[in-house]
Length: 429
Image (cartoon, rainbow, N blue to C red):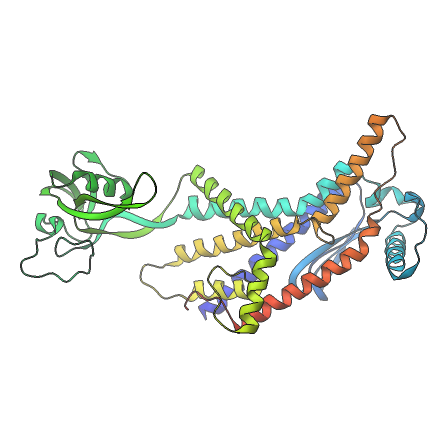
């Protein structure tokens, strides 16, 4: 049941993400006077729609995208001085021009998208991806700064029996008792000071223990509301640490014999922003290496073997992970921690939508951005040369490319869906 709830929450998050992406296009287009005839979330058969003003708003059956229909996307032939081209490609371009012109009502040519200036076209086309970027930022801050990140606390979760680098080590009768156990520390104690240093984070305590190396120290703990001060001598153990050159070296450090509990801890806003920046960069790198990653998925799917945890996954795979996140049964994993994982998952989805849509190929937003940049560059060049401003960019000529890219995207989506079904990436193995 929880698995189904997790999948449902993910699908809802996906629909909201798509809806906001399209709003990012819709609002500036309307603000600039472009007539928007349709705003649709999803593809395929229409499940529900309602017309308000001059725009039909609706929800379609397949939640794998959405669109806004901007009237007059392509300039007519006379606006760009184009002559009909022979052949199938020429027919495709002419058909796109005619379909675009047919949507323009009499007397409303000034409201066509192609009439916008290049900067306004950029605002409209970038509005969708930027909306996803902003939504991802909000979700990351909400997850990490408002709810928290699972991490070690200063509360004792377990005690070592003897001096050993492993909490579960088998101890013999001649082994030295771990300093924490010998001093009387107990599970549930919250360490508030160590060797005169106030302790608020586990990393502070770990560093102080390592630095104490066999000295007599005072440990202040909070137990059942009371504050106790204990005296102990830390033991010495050999541990591998990173040396100055990055290579592991063995170093003798202090040992106490405590293992912390884990809990959600809110992180500062600056840390959340840094985590968001890293997540954005990691997502962008995946987009850059997408062809190679898809080749790996195809090889594993049809050649046999197991997919790695770092494998690129599709919508089915992300839905599976969302369901497993909601259904996981593990001590210490509560509703808040599940919420953090789910918010992070939807944030990652929005970052993928942001980065993927900026690929400079039509019909993706990035392809239209390239068209607007080319148009703006031509006009600026003409201005510098003192020449008459050129007409709008003939973006209808990119129609054959758009069909080709659409087929590639469809094939990619089918591959990932099939791979997620027959060679899934799973949290539970």
